[in-house]
Length: 527
Ligand code: G4P
Image 1 (tube, rainbow, N blue to C red):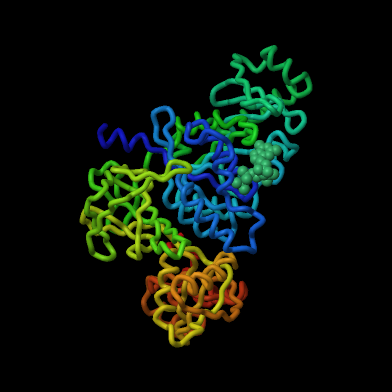
Image 2: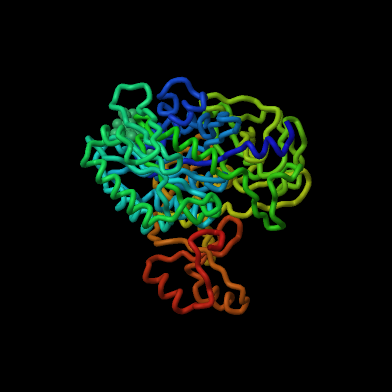
């Protein structure tokens, strides 16, 4: 099959949600449809248990297992579907942010009773910044929840997304009868628990169809008719291009655990979702259909087994074809590397592959050559944009606790930062090292791994900071003046970019007022 056909077959996306909304369940149902797994539970058992919040070793162990399910590829209707798993656990939010740089679209799962939750807001903000096309799946319709219109309002206000429903629920909770697909003009009847598939599809030509009235009963049917009128009055018609441009998000209703509404979601997804998108580099825009290989590392996973020091670097192919045992140019190191065991991930098993195409993600065994954001090409020097770091939320000073092991400490810290476990800042005045994380768990992870993998020890000192903000200014003189006056609040990130460490929201406001020509952003890439 030729290169263009292969690339056009790829649909690479991520499923994101606040923990417990049903991401794992939905993923599993999609894999069942794709034949990638045979029984429910295969993905679930790999999920990071939500109760294990204080036991990071257990979490790391589970993360180790979940490498296998980090990317789940399966064929569906002559397409190659790649689902990139995103850890729902809040303390791994950075991991999720980075994974979002490697997808072409996203499905957001929302719990009908809880509505839009905090974690979802943050993740969608990243998608919005990148104009990633989004489909929303409102889950757990078998339970009592919020009114369908209220939910759409909430999505529009909290997530700042324009929506258009492509399915509409008839009843909810105890009264849930099914959904009407506005996209395919059919009614999907919800069957009570215990059935293999929780749905029965009924083709209807009109919403006045007798069968629908019989299933819904008069009250629900009247409600449904009036809802539908409102829907047509308020929400725009669905146009694929608006969705692809990130201007409108189609919304589906269903119940993942009952396998209800999932096939409709998948069938619409494969019709409308984008093929691999172009990617920006500092040098030029890379088109996926270019024959030469290019791509970047978006995630690195260390092996927790001390006997096997290797790591797996996740490489998103942005253009061309990747071949096993072929030399590729590592741009940052200016060196050629070849890979004898590149792996693809097929649900719960890993497989060595001979070739892969733009849109795919390949696992590369690595013993320290890769950092997040590194590019591989066929010789061209490309630097992919859009792999930002975000302001951490918790900070501590980190010091070497064993003077005899300084080298090990420095190396360990550097490698852990390359993996993206946390962010390191060096203060401009004192040259002290500061670690910033999204979840406090990472401090334990760093301490443990320094000790067990690098034979080094660290100590922490608390530090009260509000935010780290990247500083941007085109006017050299004004920037220098700012640097002089705020030196005690400044640091460099590990790429040498200037960062303001604001100790409170008040300080931040004050600095912004005093230096109107300086721009401060919560991500290392400008927004
Ligand atoms: P997550 O990955 O987003 O964290 O969520 P996950 O799929 O693990 O689902 C969280 C809980 O919600 C699970 O229950 C799951 O069974 C349930 N769930 C998922 N979809 C639906 C749905 O459509 N309706 C209802 N009523 N529940 C749903 P749990 O009790 O935490 O786990 P389990 O013991 O059922 O496995």
